[in-house]
Length: 317
Image (cartoon, rainbow, N blue to C red; front, top):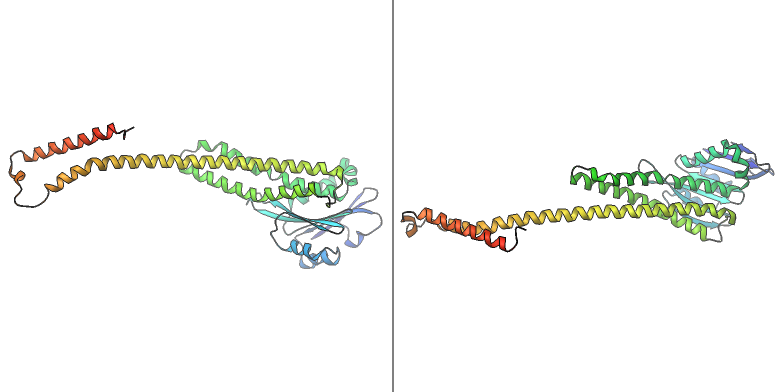
């Protein structure tokens, strides 16, 4: 589906116009949105808008890393939105020129819909917004994309703050690894978007007026904040993981120490018992009255001596 709107020289919006209306003399700028387009509609990128073949190819190859390409008369951007349920990236491709903006996406975009709704319904700000042109619409789209990163970060932070209430260590560590996996997914989306904004702000070739750069700087600040939140939360999960590993190792050491003490005591007792468990006929101790109790006493003495020796060595501390 293709949706086109135009803004006239009198700053009036006309929605759902045919594409042949875009070149009229009274058009100040226009916005065309390709929402889950058919193959015939995709061909219009090259035939009607005359976009570069490499840019069209990038639109068709999902999923691209956020990037910026310069072409004569327009700039091409690849943006990554966030699927709120799966925490996976979804792509929006944007062509931005002085007098137009063209958006392209294979799946329905909430961000695009919200910006269109704002343009159509917010009459009080319409004249001021529309006078800024297509670049301001591009800012609104990016701002909505970045704003929707925050809820998941806050949710993961809350889960980390509540993780101490877990009843068992096993449940705790499973949740920690789950949170860490989600943070990694978000990191793979947010960090490339941050790099893209850095390029936009530091490039002299991007078609952004100086007075509009402050708005993109605000988005960049948000991305920096998101990046810091992700890194701090990843460090927290790493600390919890390391603490779990240390605790597990300490428990294992205590178990091994206990088993070693028991083995050290019973090895000499087993040795004595094995000697008198042999079936030789001529063993003098076997015929002595009280030999059984004598051997038990020796074994008790050896065991007690081993316990005292190990205690003095500090094995029970």
